[in-house]
Amino acid sequence: MKNMITHYGYTDGSGEYYIVIDTDRCNGCGKCVKECPQSALQLETMFIDLEDKTVASVSEEHRKKIKYTCSSCKPERNSAPCVLACEGKAIRCVWNSR
Amino acid sequence: MKEPSNLKEDVEYWRWHEYHRVVEGKKWTSKDIITAGVDVGSVGSKAAIMINGEAYSWGITRTGSNSPESAKKALDFALEGTGLKVSDLKYIVGTGYGRVNVPMANKAITEIACHAKGANYIWGPSVRTVLDVGGQDIKAIRADETGRVVSFLMNDKCAAGTGRGMEVFADLLKIPIEEIGDISLKIEEEPPPVSCTCVAFAKTEAMGLLRKGWSKEKVLAAYTRAMAVRMANLINRVGLEKELVVTGGQSKNIGIVSRIEVILGVKTLPMPKWRESGLDPMVAGALGAALFAKALYEKDQKS
Image 1 (cartoon, rainbow over the protein chains, first blue to last red):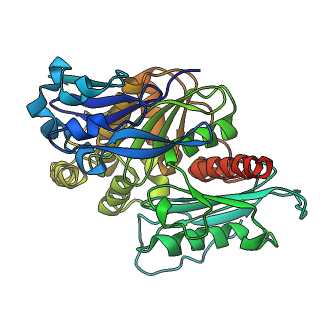
Image 2: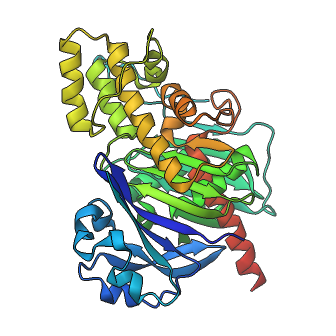
């Protein structure tokens, strides 16, 4: 069975900006939530395989402006605090400005 | 199919078809597992009733300013003519944008899971990519043969390229919303897309094009094209895998669907004949919710 991957962000005229979370690798420990300097991450209950699972997600407020929210962490290097905090390597950034 | 009388003097071009249907030839007994899914979206509220996991009836109505009332309205609409009462429903799942405000629901589930499940029910196990174009957001979902989500992307940056944006354009161009897809294809040559899908900017741009002498059809084609490009980008992000289907209100917009097919170079699975007796892709989320309701009810019975 394939892991369920969630993408938060958008593509616009200036490039593509996504925080990508593997919900099967995520154990809901919340370390990334604590490490995020912008408080952009949250723990959310998702319904996966008939079970409720607590996983990290980008908060609704920040999904719409993620390019600006995350820019100070240099997401293009994929070494943002959230990425490094995750022991299960569940988080990655897809960051390509045109 | 019952239609509300719509004989208003002021034509509301954005107004789409609210209706309910009971599948012919199906009967229920108190022994059946009767479940419901209520999908309260930002623009439309949908409810579906299932008997033992098979579609029995549904209702589609416009979402009002109050989510609990919209949920009740949609569910009552789906129950109409079935002889069923809310108390006959063994389990109700709420989903959609207003899911936490579905008072009669036993559980709320994110619409991503429900849309994938519902698309799997409507079109069968060959569905791998689902594009749901809702009133205020677009979701690209990848699913496996059981309808389980393997990847998703939700684009809710603004109302750009969504059902609500189309309603605004219907009003601006004075074209009934249900004809907008066909009319956007009545052009000799596809014009370049408008440069911005943001509803507010696109509206200004469209008015400029009309003043320049562009026909309504051409302006609509340019806007529809821009929306389709945006949607195709989302699908590419999650990874396009055949078969592709479109759910949500815009699945009925042939202008959008046919342009996505051209851009991506794949055909979508045929649209069910929802006007006759087929399932309606706008109810995919509610159908998926009703299926989860059945599974959750059975799980509760076992434990």
